[in-house]
Length: 123
Length: 108
Picture 1: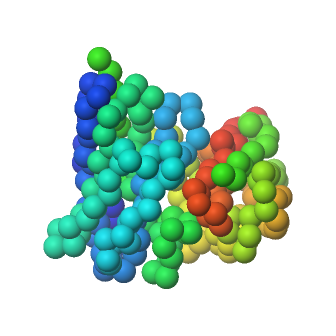
Picture 2: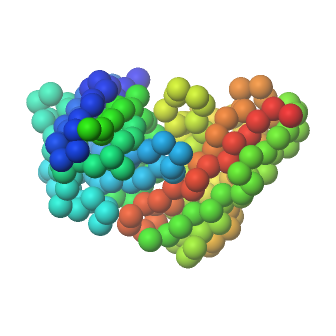
């Protein structure tokens, strides 16, 4: 079955960067786009961006543009999300999610979720 | 961006009762690109409905979605004990995709 396994929790100081991995299994990695969403404590889910795993093209929410990078290593079936210039408001659970259909790109629903990675930003 | 407002915030019901959850969009959600998810404590969200009314694989038929434009509804016809959870709607018609704030369905 489809599985997305993320790297473990992180504690970072303000101004630092964090890079989270998401390793996929159970399907052809390059056939489905991957998105990243986050949920801060008490806040709603927030979409950050996505990557076309086949060709590596990315698109980001204006809120995170310039601060986030999404990449992938097709040989390892792994995607990465790096967020820079961290601030306390970036404390959240970050999740990679797979689109629900192979034809989907940026405009899609999500049928599989990683377990989430807690990032805590604190001095 | 499209803001999704879910109501009510909390729904207190008994097993076997019917649950009706609302999701209202600040602008029209074209092509009915609206999904619903269920989330239980400590778990990742689970896709229930996409395309406003299409049940995802393995989702029981007591879950149904309806609506178009700016008003969408998730209905659980008869609540089972495992249905008590938080439910989120998501629009994916326009970028950035956005989520509602959630409706908690709790046992009365």
